[in-house]
Length: 91
Length: 391
Image 1 (tube, rainbow over the protein chains, first blue to last red):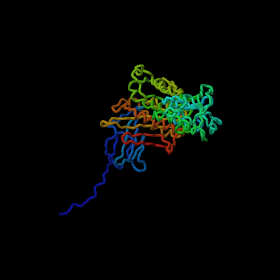
Image 2: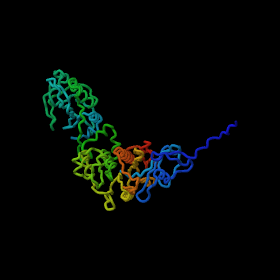
Image 3: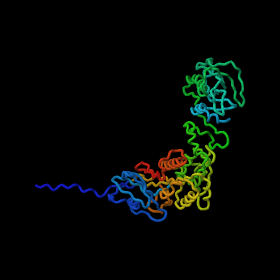
Image 4: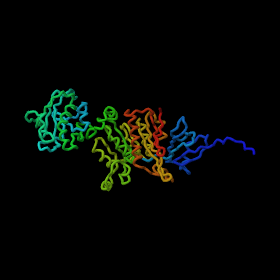
């Protein structure tokens, strides 16, 4: 009986990242924008005056494994990368 | 009485730092509250050892006089026999200003310095007392009252002298500091800044110190105090003015009408929640060319546990542009949206304040600063500090 031809497993096209403690699957090769990270953190992100988020990440790619994102910036995701996303106005 | 020679003389400073109750009076060196044994073989704890003091420009030189003097009964061995090896027949005498020599001692030696001399005599005297009371010690760590005008502290900062970092500490001396907002984080900032030799600390807050504030600020007020509904600025001034001068309480919320109160300050900690107000005062600080640190945290409940970021933004003339987008102008209520939360925990407030104070001290060359951080964020879940710096 002929064996089915062995194929290499297809390379996964997504990576799992952690946003505010929750696992999220995102495309591997697309940069994540500030707005996309906020959308991953909150189902219905609030908008308008008086809304501002702080984003920081760890376990990112080797050239810059940890850092922050401000509006307009993006970062390439990596398997296991962790994001914190929250307003940071309380004192 | 001046403490200047103690600060300037290594041997006297060493005695003070070790905990001896040291004083210079009428030009004599006095060590008080020294335990010793009486002729009844009982321990008394109130002897005073006295020495002449030789100095040059307020700095001690090697003692040429091997004698010492004593206020109290003549010290004895643990069995009540007089310690004759240090006995000297001189009569009692007064050196003025309440310095009374009931006895003179003579233990001949080439004393290297006053630390050597004092500890040699006390070893013989208090050593006998410890045979009866092992807890007896002349190391009483007395509170040291600051002398002279222009001192910011009401007693001497012996933590700095013990650590030997007086010159480093001097770098923030004389500054005028503003702390805007005495909430959880601002109150911990104040707790740390009061212990530095800055000249003035201006606090700004129009709020009342309420019950919930007690759970995220330094100290522990009684309910009687909470019942008086003190203003925050007055509550904290009352605590910290026990220790230092120069706390100026401004019982106001800063707004367009009173931003001039910030003029003339050297550095400001921005610890307020309200975005629109913060915009105005940051504009003023930038216009004044001031460096400032702005703090804020965001903590959320996710799956029954808290997570979030404790963030500090540092803005200087060099890092203004990079720092600007990290300053939070989110409003107090977060737009009244479903994600709005006002979770603050004392240790996170204290951490935020500690990072803010470290950042301030970096700008004044107290701490080394290799990265010129403008963003410093502690991520609670991952436990690391993420930073952005211009170096």
